[in-house]
Image 1: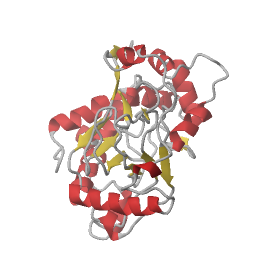
Image 2: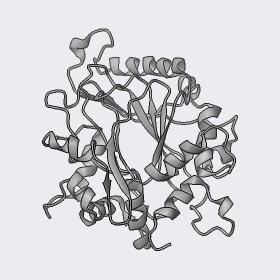
Image 3: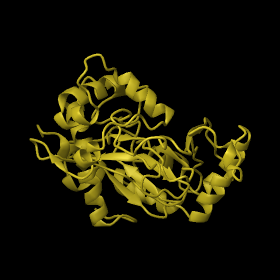
Length: 319
């Protein structure tokens, strides 16, 4: 498969780990200009960029989407081509419908993380783990999400509030959805995945039958870093790679980034908010890249599989 932006090793990382980071997906200057726009929105809530005494809430939400020119400058050909490197050329609904010079993308919502969880030791959360798409049924070939894009508009260093991702977890979800061909709502699917896989069960502390997956989504949708457990969780889930009975390699990682970087994620990748101990406000949002039609996991010609389809197909044990 010929690609325009991503390298062969980046494609393979996406297939195996479920994500790849695209550096400078859009110019740093455009990202910082967008951040200034967002500071102006925060000022309406009494939060001032030059007055840290007004940063009273650990997390402040801007519950809007924006499509003005400030954000369209972040809508680069480099990013669009990288998206199609993963989902297949001509298969992205937004680019196909509007054309590469006409599309106008909405950017938002914005959970601005000032200091979430800064009052306790940094750790791997037990709650908040999810994949996106709360309000719709999920199928293994669902077209609605395409890729999850995590778009960064500020400098995010280690323990600075970056999104935590569970490498390899997309394979567990793909297999689960393939086994439930009639479709599952997201909360049901997450609940089932958390209880059926030993590593996810430990990661999400899903041992109490009274725990509801809806609570997991509530924390995720709020953009809050959930309560952490003991420091042993860092050693267990980040310092070690777990290999399950099917050879799936699983590990939690931080995703430090700079303004203009984008994380391109498989739609089934588990991720969670993390604590911000840096003192630097974190600005990011996520986007979907819906497909024109469902993924095709049974193509006549293997060369026609996109990396997204190939990653999903290879994750299904019975294929």
